[in-house]
Length: 121
Image (cartoon, rainbow, N blue to C red; front, side):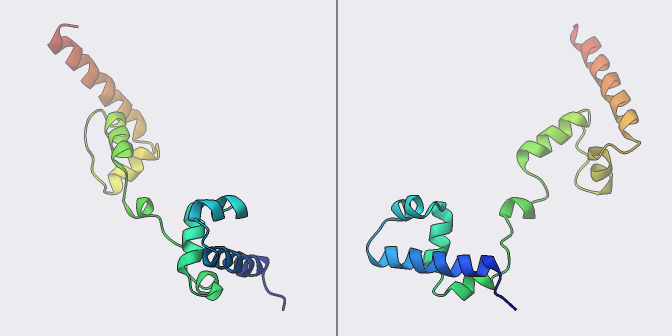
């Protein structure tokens, strides 16, 4: 069975990166020369063999490990009429626009109207 193209390309890139590193090239120069991101060049430089890269599990971004970023949390709270429903099942249902969305919108309108009456607007 022939080797996957990605494995062949990874070996070629690993060799090229290490050759340029040995010649004293900077990460930025290697990145520009090979058309790779600086992060990719660093990853290839760090790996002692191409097999480390080929057999490595796909990395998981720290952002994906967090349940939500502060920005999305703020957006969720604003769509929830200012209420923080937390990260439970209810929060997921409300964000995805399940049938409770109509009730949530009604609550937002009521909260807004109450706020306007109380502040004189």
